[in-house]
Amino acid sequence: MSAVPALELHGVSVSAGDKVICHDVDLVINEGEKHLLLGPNGSGKSSLLAGIMGISPFKITAGTALFYGDDLKDMPVEERAEAGIGLAYQRPPSLQGVQVKNLAAAIGATESLEEIAGKLQLSHLIGRNVNVGFSGGETKRFEVLKLALQSPALCLFDEPESGVDLEQVDTVGKAISQLLDSKDSRGRQRSGLVITHTGFILDGIDADVAHMMVDGTIVAAGDAHEMFESIRTRGYRTRSAS
Image 1 (cartoon, rainbow, N blue to C red):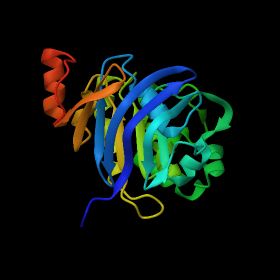
Image 2 (cartoon, rainbow, N blue to C red):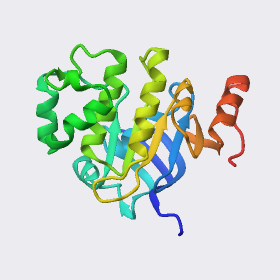
Image 3 (cartoon, rainbow, N blue to C red):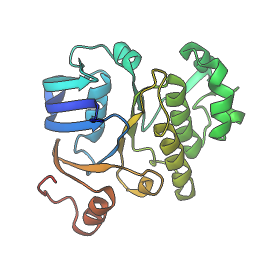
C-alpha cells in the first residue's frame, strides 16, 4: 500500500505580522509516522507548529501546506481542529473556574474521560481546574489527555519534556507514543510532529525520522538517534538533508 501524506509542507513560510520567522520549509509526514523536530532556541520550531495549527498571530504566508490534501493556508484554526489537527502546548494556560470534566464535556468526550484519564494516571484531576496547581508531569500528561479527547489525526507536541522531572520524561514519552499508536475518530492512524530541545523524549518515542531546524528552515533530516548524537557532540551544524 502506498503511503498517504497526512501533512505536506512545500516551500512554506510562517510569519507573525510583517516578520517572517520560518521560510522555505519542506516537510512531509505520512499517515502513521512520528517525526521529531530538533533545533536551537529561537530557530522557529514553535512558530512552525503554531503556523500549522493556525494560532494567531502566526500565519502560513508562502508555499503550499496541505492536510490530507486540503489547503491549510486560509483555513481558520477551528476548522483545522475539526479536520483533525491538535496541538499540545509547551506552556499551556491555566483555566481558573474550568474543571477538567467540564472541558471534556465541551469537547464532547465525557464518556471517554475516565478511561483515558485512568490510563494516564490523571483520574485525580478530573474535578480540578485545568492546569491550576498541576505538577510539571501532570501538565504535560494532561496535554496528552486533551489531545486524546479531541482525537486528532495529526498531533503536534511543543517540547513535551520541558519543565518535567527527568524521571517523568519517560512516562510522558510513553503516553505520547501510546496516543500516536492509536487511530483517530475517523479511523486514520495518528501521525505526530514532536519538538524536542533536550532529546530526552527519544527514549519514549520510536520516531521514524528527525528534522533539524536552524535559522527558520529545515536543514537536515535523518535517523532521530543519530541526529541527536551528532547535535550533542557537534552542535547544530548545517548538514545536507538525507
